[in-house]
Image 1 (spheres, rainbow, N blue to C red):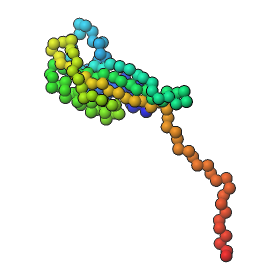
Image 2 (image 1 turned 135 degrees about the vertical axis):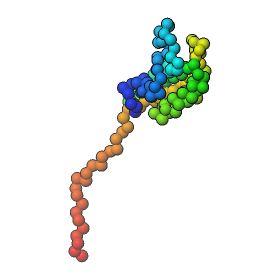
Image 3 (image 1 turned 60 degrees about the vertical axis):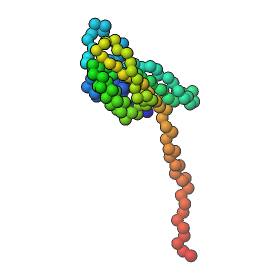
Image 4 (image 1 turned 30 degrees about the vertical axis):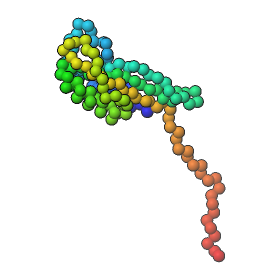
Length: 144
């Protein structure tokens, strides 16, 4: 099952953008650009095919890093906690509650987590439709 969004990255961005903070791909901020006061970054760690059936991939495991940076350390913790809750509500797995990450700016503190979504590519087998009985059963004879 794929959640909202065309891709898993779209889905992740939709969740993070709901917090009304900038969302930037990790490492893509221009070297001379000023850091926003508070912002998210993300990075697609991997997309691994798993579980094959009839020579077809049945599952794809999508793994992303989600990081929060801010000039206010308490915002880093609270915003990451809120993001984790939103991700879990959307079907993402978050095996850790967060970890410290380095910031290139002395004014900012960073914290991140890894989140995973397991996408099912194969459709579940539909329930079989019962075949109609080709020969109807006659009504019982009402006479003794």
